[in-house]
Image (cartoon, rainbow, N blue to C red; front, side):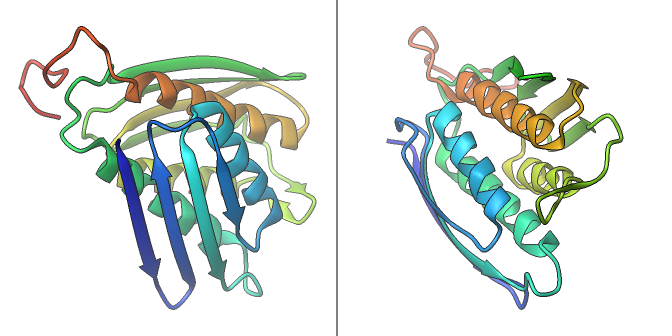
Length: 194
């Protein structure tokens, strides 16, 4: 089983995260940011990655540190659990609707952490959650997972729907890319490593 557990503490956040890439989408999420909890549950359910997150942070200052740092730790855990990446499909993509919102995600588990992100330039709050923090979460995940991620909202008006569509599209694309291809016995790269 491809699993990882990461514990990361800074002056701003304390995070414990465990995951199983070969799971069934079970989750236990406890952060002080309600909307982040919802997005992590959504991510787990649609990626089929079992996910446990326990986080605290300086939310009296802002949700920014907690949201970004959970993304970082999730990226670290995915990278660790992937190991040598032998047998993975490597690429994944999805176009996912959430009511009027539609998002596209295409990923390459390449070892090159790049995020190309477009949220239609929309800004605002989802309850008390700043919508632009979604980009910080995805950026943290991308940089620490070593994955190239193209993540774009193609349409939408409701910020909650757009955020959820973006998260689901990442989850579905990642599910494809981390899947073991029974025909592949090596690392999916002509270089021999990722």
